[in-house]
Image (cartoon, rainbow, N blue to C red; front, side):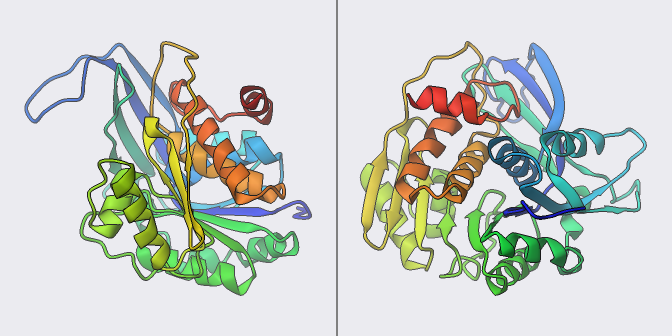
Length: 324
């Protein structure tokens, strides 16, 4: 197989999402809620980003590295099939032996309320064993992306040691590192990852609060959190704030990016919005655009995703039309 076009590698989680839609609201402990629709489809933050990146960049330009297993119910199929359909190179996906006790593919259970708010319950399965060895076996992908001045995108839905190894490997090959800290656990110290090796760190408000210990309640507190994150080493920080847009920060200052006012459909689903934002900023940078232009398109793209049920990647045509 030729890797002449490969310019982006995504490492991490490969999940199947079981999404319940139409709940009146999110539940409190002990309550029962009744939704109106269920969807089973591809998921996993890193896998979402890979599919979305390929939709924007085109076939054979993106590779996915991760783990899954062929369970007897076929739950592994939706995320892998969607990657293949999008033109993602899957030679870096390792299929390990199925084990009914601990070796299931990753599963996410996602109730979505009518206003688009959601909760996510993740059963990691074999994602939890994603290792340095898996990355070493995909050294050919790092070398191919390096030839095209490519990038590595990752999330924190993987073991921290694997994430650290992946970042070091990317830097050794001269790849730009783009990190979404989604998946970071309460009490897990990931400061060893957030260094000058990171070109872009893209947290949302909750993740930024977890990383800094600061409560984000307004623009002033968001600026304070973004500055603290920049001081940890990343060249750029894109702190997304939902309907309030985003804050792009670097050592040179901060720029606020407004959230576009779109009303495209009755459906509102926050699933995958952050992943779409991450994929779009990666794709736009790979096309040679500046970071501020890329961030603006990323926020627009994430907003478009909000009006879609589940993971339905935004196309380049749709993004261009919305940007007019």
